[in-house]
Amino acid sequence: MARIIEGNRRIIKMSVDDVLNIVREYQRITYNACCYDHIRELLKNSEFYVPEEP
Image (cartoon, rainbow, N blue to C red):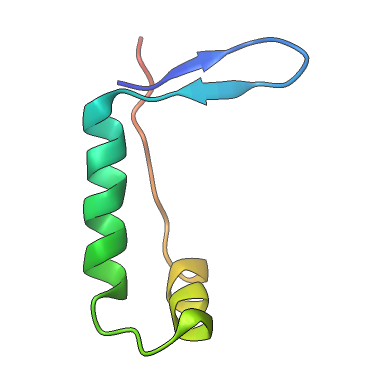
């Protein structure tokens, strides 16, 4: 699970499973994309969530 690390700037430390889930979603969303601009448009209209570690 992801963990938010406080500092000058908040960052999110992700686990291997978090990264793999995001890559899987990226591949699912962009599967039929024809070009870079199309990929950007598809991703702009998508939401990605990473659960926070309690």
